[in-house]
Length: 135
Image (tube, rainbow, N blue to C red; front, side, top):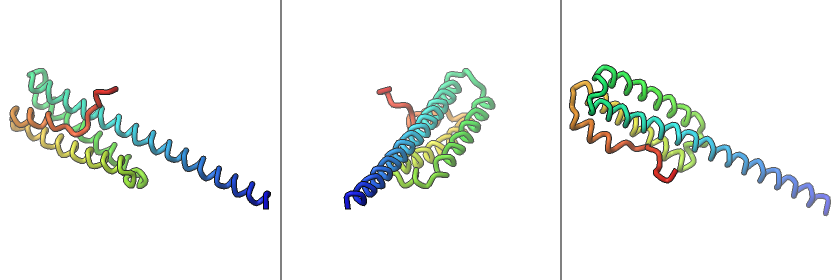
């Protein structure tokens, strides 16, 4: 019996160790995705603010926003390619916020195309993913 208990203990220990390593990797992956989305949110804000300040043309701004949109979509795909990330409430929330960011960027592209500075200003205040102030 002691030998079986010892073997069972090792199996439980190994399962816990592997499970906690998986959680750690999941936490790390979600944090990396969050940081990428935060960076893209910051880029979106900077692009929009530059256009509002007259520092960039409409064509340049539209192109930069389109490229940012593509990067957000690529990162969303990378996040969604791991089902475990979407099962995790943090990953699900991040995925939803990234989708809102994509829709917002699309609206901002339209704002620039029709030269609607008022609408763009409003959109800039609703960017869903930005770096937290506590870092």
